[in-house]
Length: 157
Image (cartoon, rainbow, N blue to C red; front, side, top):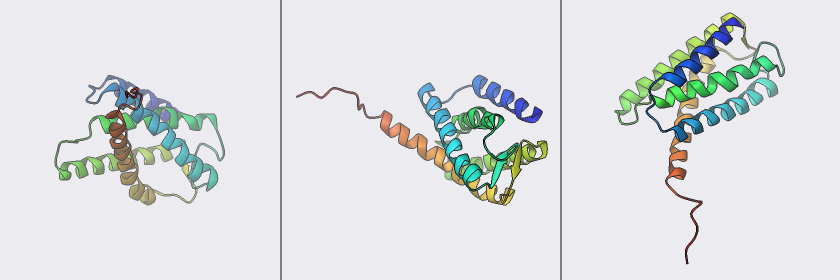
């Protein structure tokens, strides 16, 4: 539990105080999407299929800490520094770096005891993380498309 609390404090502190490259509305959308996406994923993979979990099987209040604090802050950090205007090579390296960081953090979470496997493993995570990060990118792209259009604008005849 100490590792989780320490991680929450560090992630939030870093996410709040690093220089922001994206506008606040995008950071807010990224944070909310990270919470919803993490919650839906965990409901299916943890509660429905029991492949992994937080602390103990079933719903546990402490299991909401990563979803409500680690997921949005890491999503904001990932997207805030994403090299949008760099080469595909740099973008792939960035994705791989975040995948390696995520795997290492997941390993530490298992060692600390707040996360456990039950049919899941680090190899599955290694395959899944790049797709999860790409889904974050797709979400921001869709958000930006919607922000470019003013759906609240009154029609004039």
